[in-house]
Length: 229
Image 1 (cartoon, one colour):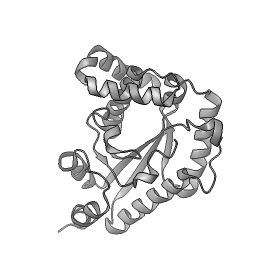
Image 2 (cartoon, one colour):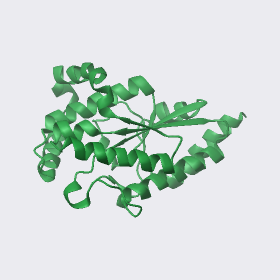
Image 3 (cartoon, one colour):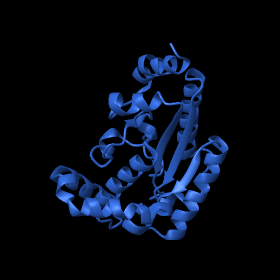
């Protein structure tokens, strides 16, 4: 058996069953085939700090953001040790447009937070790549238009009600439809451009339906979910 196949067998039989905190999405048809490739692209989106009025924009050593980054660094370190010969390329995406365009956060607040996050990422996961969603704004537009054109096929009433409840709870005046379109457009663009395995930082139900066909893994304990909130 090839060394790479042994590594994927370890992931499937040992690591995933023991470490998952929620059922993966598209495990057999998406995650395992991508893990069998020599180069594996991982993807993790990261929201802006919505409670910046109380927490500020600077990430401190004891903050949940740092704990999550260390958790993810240990995760990929274990994968490298047990899946030798593989190259893991991890892309972190700062969801700046969700803060500025949809939830009306000050642009400087969002920019400063993500600049600080990028510094922490360089310290803890120096091999990772950090990009902002706004960098792909023009490229994502065709996917937004695709979702808007057939909105009711992508979004059912339960999903819309859930998004509306979240928007009201956040109290930022965000448009739930705009948020859902953005999530679906992001998922379509990322899946098409990167063909990644998403390592999510939120509860599984928050990704359902809005992540389109992105294969997703869930390893974070609940107390570490959404470290930006």
